[in-house]
Amino acid sequence: MPAEPAMPRIATVTLNPALDLTIPLPRLERGRVNRAGAAELRPAGKGVNVSVMLAVLGEASRATGLLGQADLPAFEAFLAPLGIRSDFQPVPGRCRINVKLVETGEGEVTDINPPGPTADDAALAAMLARLDPAPRLAVLSGSLPPGLGPAALATVLARLKAAGSLVVLDSSGPAFDAALAEGPALVKPNRDELSALLGRPLPDRATLLQGARELQARGIGHVVVSAGGEGALFVLPGACLWAKPPAVALTTTVGAGDAMVAGLTAALARGLDPEAMA
Image (cartoon, rainbow, N blue to C red; front, top):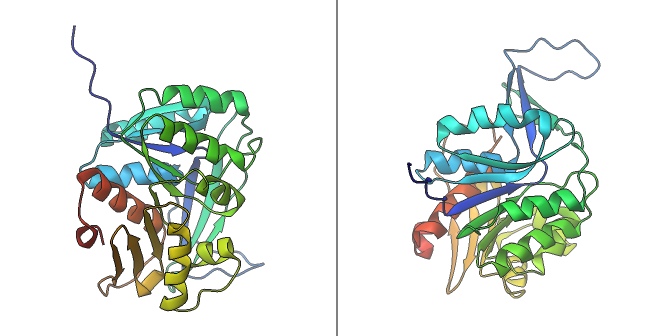
């Protein structure tokens, strides 16, 4: 009898996945008929996107979380050819469809994100049971579905940490704030998310650095703050770096944050030093 394949050392956890409907159009004109290009519908959600980018980087992962029962086959069919193990806890109904209106002329993206199917504490507990054995690294990202309060992210993070996982956290709002108290290994807010968390503007590098150090003082070893075209601030154990991206022609920023989280996760998995990580 063939042996079971080894469990990937990385798991992504998406509690509110989606089908992303991306519609390209030259320019969005409100209140008028807009002629668009060919639309694309594909399984997504922040953790799912991270798993896809990890596969591009040569890192195997297990995609977990909560998912509408009716969409399990579509997600499995999408992830399996990429070598990603699909291990979602089903909940009644279908997952949400997030609409992305991409203006090809200016690169602007308008997101329309509905709430998703309702989940409850029993579904969350069943999903947590699927995470046994615990991964070496877990990426906990995205929003919460209806039915789960802000403490749900903290519950998942605490369970993973107690089982020995290093946790990368990428979320926002009250759920992100609550989960920070559990001490993730790495967080990656963008400038606006960090500003909202701290309750003050962070207009320049000096204030951004101060804000990142405040997070690190809460016991978070790796704080990475993305700042769009300006680059990203890395406040790491024993190092503080500013990484500036190469100049490229911008077409869209869709998925940029998730790609960055995947790169950071791969760097942690490979034990890279701070400069190599940045």
